[in-house]
View (cartoon, rainbow, N blue to C red):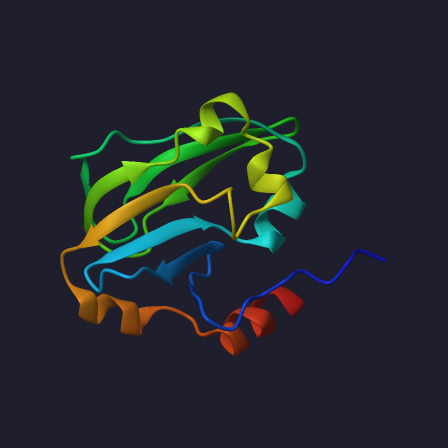
Length: 132
């Protein structure tokens, strides 16, 4: 049986398997894909992320992640402007497999509308979704 995917209690989630983490700056969040998502994708070989300054609306496609088996679009959980993308993933995209909630984060986003965080799934809701 597959290992149970990790769902940290301090994050927000989307049904499309992105997570949102608050940072020390209340206006900035960190976005990545969940442990469940990286497990479904398998070995990640490339990730295409936006440059700082790019703006996205909620559920806009902000990049792609390429695994051996498939290419998946990345959906922005909340609207905002990219302040940083994770340069470490250029040389080591498999960081997403190893540390989806750590070194494998994808972008930091300045929120346009912090209230949108309230539209996301809590850990319980996300856990129920992936339990199917």
